[in-house]
Image 1 (spheres, rainbow, N blue to C red):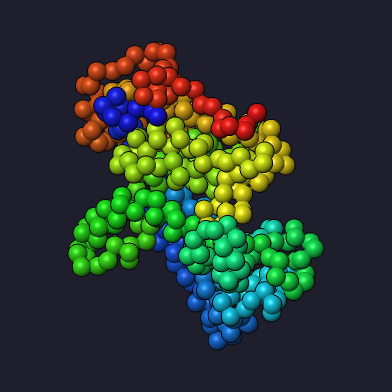
Image 2: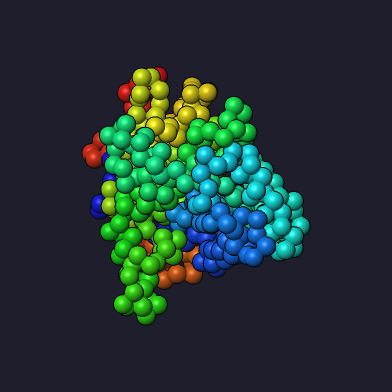
Length: 413
């Protein structure tokens, strides 16, 4: 794997820390996101609500729930706030996907009017969308759902998997499922964002709880439980590494076909599998880049990245519709990331590290991180440390004592 010990330069660690600080979504944005979805939940339970009797539960999913969102690259981009509305008193035997979507959309239209949101309620395959026009840079994708734990337990049993993974499982709507969308049937798409979030936490529980305890201590809440601290209130090495790799991915695919871009659920899942409990972000990036391909299975010639909460779901299913290009795009990006981060891991001058990472992370992020660094005491130490030559040839990602270029797992052409 990429060097994670003394071979990692001080300047590299400092630069990585400042990059994470700059990428991080400010806590007031998390507060704003939390207030938005809680407000929607209260609205759905108001006296006039047409869905209150169906016991709607509103909760957050996606990057905000995992604590891995990154700042948009410009003021023209929105934060994606992914919300689930699970109607706990409904089931697949009571309603069709289309009718459930219609119920939710009608309430969202009322919510939009009540809150003075100018934009119309939109729709995609699986969600309804609210776009705020108050300068918050938020759009809210709202996913209607019903409970699906019993069905999911049966699926897990067939795979001899832990039935506890079914906790929180939901059935969701998908308008592309034309054969079943308008009929009452047991055949609905499945999801389990809460289960995924629990798995994500379990893979980093020691580091997560250390930072939760530090958060509580800073708040003076020494008797509170660490479990009371949401994941998004702290920043672990795994969260930080995923944030940096997301931005690198965004830059790498910026000028390519958007259909080839590595989707966040794949990046997050493979990174979480690869994580080995490292305490520094730089070491975490090294471990992830070295090992993230190892969780890609070959199932009868099909590239398979299993949903950790549902072994039957393949997060890489879209690779099969264009297998050569999407699979190749993933490994091309991985090779570029390994090369660019590996090339600077031993540098002692943080400014040189930032210079070398500009092409991979973009000028605005690099300059913002440089500004943060110049205002920190650590930058002075970096400036007097021995500097690697800026024009030195890139050594590549170092695995142990030898250089290694990324290879595809067995089964890839």
